[in-house]
Image (cartoon, rainbow over the protein chains, first blue to last red):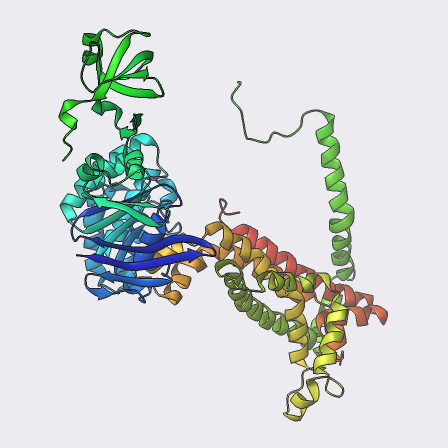
Length: 317
Length: 276
């Protein structure tokens, strides 16, 4: 295990940001810390980096007790949401910063920086100032800067949070490919469940200073440990007293065993899926169908139907 | 055409000219004309007045003393000011707001009060701390250290008030990034913080220098105003003026004003356009 967090607690005044948190983060993988804003995930990342100190508990990085080490001795790369570009230095000097601090020979710095600029596709911008770059380019520069010192772990705090949706999606794919190329242990914080599910090997769900669940994207989505994880990772609806995903439900037009009877009260088409609301005796159940399913059922508003969990889903796991 | 614009356009019509005339007239009668008259009077007899002061060893000594004191005060206030600014912006500690309020005191207290207060503490005969220092062979009041202290005191907040807003604006993320890349506190300050606050420091230094060169009230109380020893340039101006040597007074005043104007011109020429 690359990073061990053991019984870490952190308070800001009376607010408990992290409450006795323990987690192991595996080497060489891309791990997401996922949770709502103010849930403690950024605080945990900053404690790993040494930018905050834990009130109690221990942090180990690659077998070294880092709890009392200042940030400059931890050999971690940190990428900030708002880039934290050194505004007065060129892109090249930004990337070279960590190497200049380590007093590496000039020729070595030059070739290493060229290599990194090529890796993040910023070769032609080497002599610009950060102010002359777009947000996505600045964040790639920040990533190259963090990678330059060959960190033991790479930490990213909401790295794409300040970018627009399209750039965010591009950089997300790019980060995954970059990680497969350089293979450094990477931890990133996000509140976007889609981002975590798409990019991460492993997801740690954090809420109100506690860890709700740790697992692979599939495990979290298919076997959520509790209602919070279930709700946070995707759309949910209530059927009887069960919380289910709307796409795991099926609608039946005839009589069927185990189905709850109701009436179609609303039909909404959202892109490639059709959202059907079925009102039963005591609740409104949302079911999502593909267009083909919807057409074959021939549903109209007011039609009497039955709703049940689709057969393929029942034996979960 | 309907596109909203954030560019402030000058008002059209006669209102615009009225405002301009008012501003120009105000500055002219308050600043430009009086300063010009000082210069005009200084050169009323050609270079005679200027020659008069540069050939008088006591006045040359006063000018040298003023420059020396101002430079020492500026160095102290810059080092102390940048340090205090970092403390105020980057750290949280009890009494912080009180400290911040105290730092503005030199701007609100009359310099002459500052001078009297320093005499009460460091005065050689009756001061609270002065006699002890004096017996150790260190004279503060009626000597250069006292003049430096008075000058440092009155110019104290100028660097801080310039640097604090800049520090707040740049934030601490760049510093954190530098730390995570391996820089220690000194390297982070020299390579990241200082370049970021450079212009704030430059303005603070210029303002402090101008203020230090021109300080009169506090210096008058603590210096003793001894000709050729502790008389500074501003005291020379007063002394000459009162002794009906108006030419010498205007010439010295002109030199003092010239240095201040030169400082401001130099800064406005060298500063980059996109920076404040």
